[in-house]
Length: 529
Ligand code: GDP
Image (cartoon, rainbow, N blue to C red; front, side):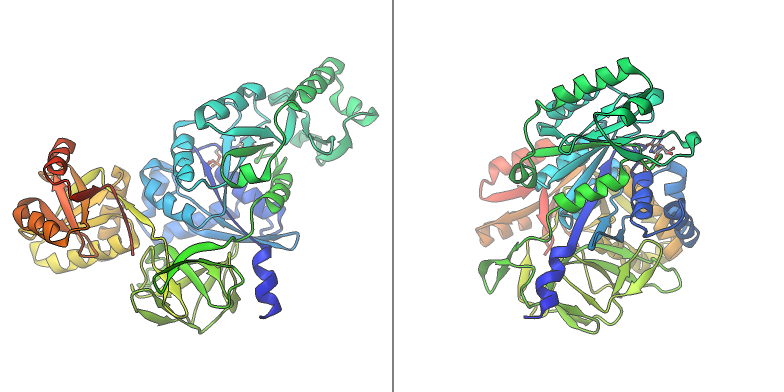
């Protein structure tokens, strides 16, 4: 076994940031890239966004609504480790997309605004994390602004998220009186300097003259020391509990003031687990694939189409699970499609580079012409299958109607392409020529309409169809399933993989059909193969 195959996976850290809009995710991302030296000037992350916006009009939605709807990956290095930061979309309509991205992350950083605590979107994203019990590091941001008492914030996290919470640091006040944070393990104090002071933040012992001078307020210092003492009463950090997603360590800082950001990266270096063995199926057997296994294996968690409008290409984001990937290698999907990976891309802060080699924990972009789909397992043998990535039952169904009926073929192609990319789902009813699209949230429909217009030049209306909801059907008894499908043609459709879908007017209809057909399962999620 090559030495690199043994050692490289140990140096990878894959994580994502989850937060409610405005909590500071972009600022934190940018300052992490700055602190690690991956970029040299603030504003680069935003600038990257600008450049992309000029490429594609649908990004207008991002601009107008002030939200980020496309996700990508950014790589940076720190202390000999390679961090892959997966960017999750910040809007609730994209929880499905977020879920897919989180299947590829080994940890999530949950950013909270110190004045707002847990907000609705934090809660939703947290629930998505909980589906996989992914470890969560909490970063409480904007300490340079007046905030909620940290004891109250911690209780709120405990209550609303049902997590054990362990502060790793303790802040001295907030807002104008904010003085810094103490590391509760080392008892060293990181002094916050206001930007106008021109001084750098610096470490000092928690006892001694320097901290007295820094505070310049004895009452405040006494109060802080008392609180920090009380904070030691919280339970000790337990690595196992953290890794199982039951305990979250808490850090404090100000992303905007570059305070506590490097300390957060240091914490991630220590806490985020390196790539772990991944359960898979090979030759009908349940196995665990170790990051150091020789065969290259991994899965596609995101497909982004038309990143460059001049080339109608798509980039599949492939998370490696094992092996030593070399550029030019041939990889096969579980269902027998194969492709030569000549131009795999790695995404550094400002650049894309060709990946000559890659290991477990790396995320490479594989340009292709529609061969790869979200959820695909790709390996050298083509015999390895990871748990699929689920589709969620749509909460919104719309019938696509063309302004120019002669372009039906084009529309079908566009809708299929967007469905394969995972933007929306597509259902073809058994009767008639309608095309029904499904989405978890209405923003997905807006994005789709915009993209069909700019990328395919088609004008489309979306009408409310006579159905409200959809369920995937399975049964252990194929004959019974066929009988049901034949008897209910009016309500039946096929999804993009040709699997049967029951379209219903209401949840009540589904309950009724389920009761009458106990051998058939009406599923709200479907694993993409
Ligand atoms: P996102 O929506 O979570 O990506 O949030 P942004 O990073 O875009 O930040 C939202 C707003 O909060 C921006 O105006 C930031 O400048 C501001 N902000 C972010 N971090 C801090 C911080 O630590 N302190 C203060 N005062 N403002 C911050």
